[in-house]
Image (cartoon, rainbow over all chains, first blue to last red; front, side, top):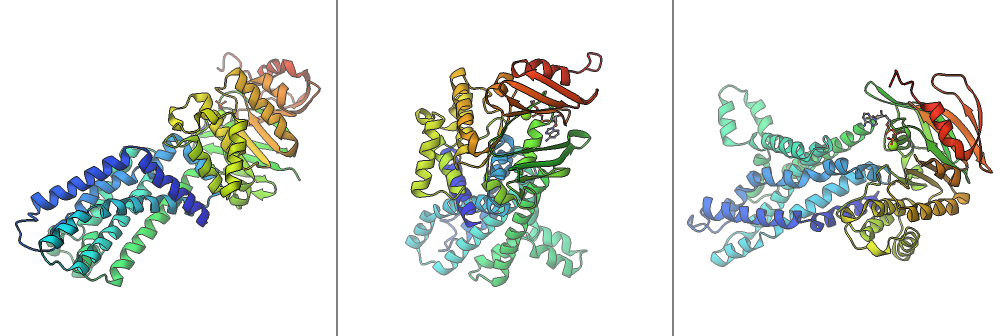
Length: 245
Length: 258
Ligand SMILES: Nc1ncnc2c1ncn2[C@@H]1O[C@H](COP(=O)(O)OP(=O)(O)OP(=O)(O)O)[C@@H](O)[C@H]1O
Ligand SMILES: [Mg+2]
């Protein structure tokens, strides 16, 4: 089990760096993070020594950037035929699913970690609450895992990377906006409060905002953990279903 | 107990019945030539045998392990070269073989010597550090072959192993198969019928998903039990060099139906 996870993990992680994908992704990711934070977020002009603005853009960036990582996870194997190799090697399906996911998640973690200059900057300029910043980083990474798990399941359902990308963005969008003020306000007029609560409790925003406040609540951890586990399970089911032809 | 047992395997893709009840077994020391026209169901049968596809009906066992219910022990004992020899294009043969070794539980010195052995046998040394996607078709095939024999498996399933190889390499691969065959049970599919006479101890012809001929080859003679799609069951004894004629007689479609 573990042997399979680590072999797949290492191969996948190396694959990101064997192609320009890693470089292109990291450059765009960092550029977009910077652009949003400094220009749209008014990082220097809002006069606050915190990274709230920076983190508040993460869900929206992930919405498009994470599916760009996850779309290849299974669709590419199917297209190139290597899936036949992968599934006939003595690797449990769960290990293959997990190894691929963990590699993508580690890569997303690396991209996130490379935003550290912004953290240095804010510490240089003022006295931010570094506990809150650490919690936000952890929350952001968990959220990235959620988007990745969704993307993994979608990628397993198709052999076409473009379709995988588009469908992942749409599903991720639903999971994001479910808790956005815009949606909550629009629905609150006619929807029972309990239902509204349920919908927004499925939103990445709701949980990420809670973490960004500086407390990592068990509920938020359980939410992202369960969501990741669920979509990885769906991934395995979809891969297995495809074997039935 | 035969090392490969295929028992009434059938596979339908929607309305297409690709394989319709194939039964066969392969013992240690046997090299089975798996023949049949394009679309006969050779690759599909192999995909079911190796656990890539779930059969619609029937079962396959490798050294007694059911491929469906107990895939991992079966797959540990199996080397498989899928049709078209897929491999990760972004990896080098060195990296790819190291990955396969890792998955197979070979580490350190064991991995190193296994890789060295197959690299020598498939003559890959020259391209070891070149991305697989930039290799020529024949070299890609050899990488797939190297991967299949890396762990010296007792059961070897190869889908058109010599397709795309130059005459020298075809010869090398045939020698390789011949050399390995006493310790293994091997299935090779091929469209090159001379190859069957050269390396196989037995041949099976399938047509439209069914076995239409099955028989041993010895001293250049082949004794087929036949059951063609549109004809009487019977026996055909032929010189292995005339396999071509037998093949066409058993699988040719009447012109009107084609
Ligand atoms: N995934 C699939 N979906 C639908 N039909 C399929 C699929 N895979 C195979 N088939 C069909 O099953 C039949 C058998 O195909 P298969 O690849 O097993 O033939 P083959 O004997 O290997 O032929 P070849 O000599 O050309 O390699 C063909 O009619 C093919 O179109
Ligand atoms: Mg084939």
